[in-house]
Image 1: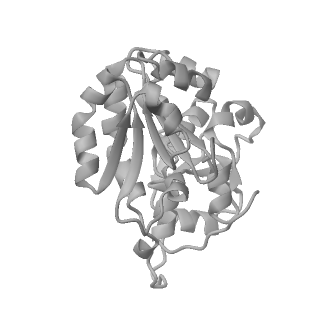
Image 2 (image 1 turned 135 degrees about the horizontal axis):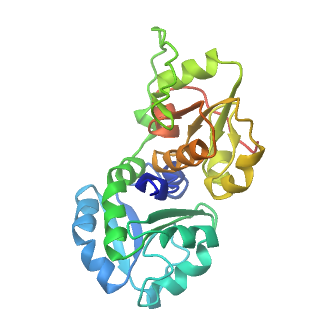
Length: 280
């Protein structure tokens, strides 16, 4: 049976910083949902409001008036009723649609950058049924809130003096999780290493770890066979879910030398390490 975490695909939440100014006191997010999903998500929406995030609830018929909003959450996949499925069907790839219906507990996050305008982020929270969609919202809520509220002022300015050792790979797990400081030690200390940024291209271009290659989760299935299984890899995304998904996919494909940076690019930024910009 597939691991549930396999089905928690890309939540490239550093991407949201492209769509939401860190200086805004109130963060607006358009939430597109049917009556069932919006009712089930009422506590989730209440949590967003409590955190200073303003959800604007619209249904499928109202979506055309909001499709150019900067930040959009769509609740439900291609099988969702009341017109939501008609919206998400063409936004999701066939592989993503298949993943959502692959087993009763399946759930998947799809992140779409710059779809209808520049500096826009659309995130689809899709579950096998309404229960899985709602479960996915709650599993990712803290990550969503942290990324939405992240400010550059959170970045450390003090230079680091303590040396961090390189953690050993743990053969009992699909990948070894490391902090940003440990990730920096790995990058500086292992020569036979590939850094993979698994976010979508626009987010990679906006800022990434120096030396990282960009292999978005959406194309990983087509790329994984061309990667060297003897190489050591360190993975990161905007938060956690996408790099977890990619780590499991690579481990299932026979890769054993895998590290993953917990909290991804946000942790790297908060640690104050250097960043690069532009295309690979």
